[in-house]
Length: 197
Length: 197
Ligand SMILES: [Zn+2]
Ligand SMILES: [Zn+2]
Image 1 (cartoon, rainbow over the protein chains, first blue to last red):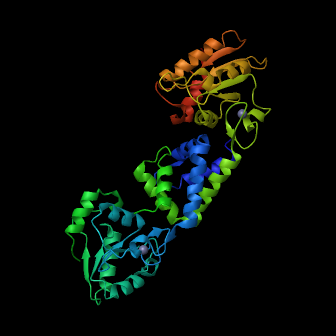
Image 2: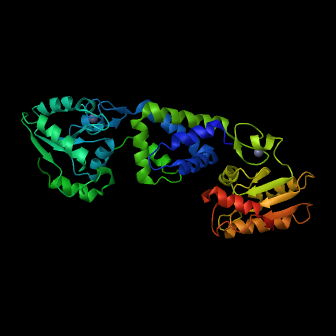
Image 3: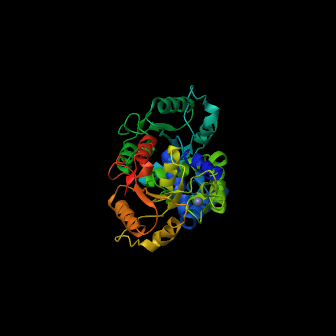
């Protein structure tokens, strides 16, 4: 009953987080209703993002410049390296405005169930970065979940012979909590009270 | 901190129904993370929809063919004309599988507050369609809200001198309910028990 073009739009929209099949249908309709003011600009914004946004080869952040603006910023403290699960966690960190170091984005967490191993997360490369003389502290900011803490312990073990302090975010991050769902104040408090891992 | 390309993507996504500012951010990240499997196909699907999906000049439905597949289908009963608020309501009607007539999509409801008058909804054109000898019944399926029923009464008044029955959906549609939020069974029951308006 709905044409294949709109069916495909609904099906792709339903893969966005926060949109189920019904809300994807409503979103598709809204798009077609607002062809000039929403559908065409959004299609263009997506094509532009697909064309211009790259993964930073240094830290794994998304940006249109390579390396990313954070890695390229000489005012960022190269002695602090914050390890996060994904770019959403990096953005959540940045929104606090209280971290002035650099990042390593894992792009996931260790998971036997999902078959995610250390090589998938670039942990060897992270350990190499931590060996740089400029790095004094690695902050393990993976989530306070079983997988997040398993990943943090794995990384901490592999940093044991590096000349860096290894710290984790302080309690204050709710158990089971993802950084991206936390308010800025909680993340800031957890960062300030970070403890030796 | 986030580049302007991603900011623009987030801003446009947040205008979709069901996505607030936070979920729009998560959706943008998901898109950039899944560049090949989601971002590029969705940008293409949107461009294709913008290019191919048109408003049917007869009924106001969206389709890639003109007139739309419903208007062009000779098996649809030309004696029944169902008046709906928008294409979402038309789709909700179609999902029931229990209506075999044709549609008139208003594209809104009368609203003094929003400055929506009869000319914005093409009501004169609807009355013209209802004058066609083939049309025996006009079903006013606008929502059971104040604006929906005001609009239905306005249309019924203007159909008074046409040789058509004017009916409305039966009680069964919850008061204040939008068609698109109803299950198929409720819509089917309301349609079967439709009453003279
Ligand atoms: Zn970077
Ligand atoms: Zn049509």
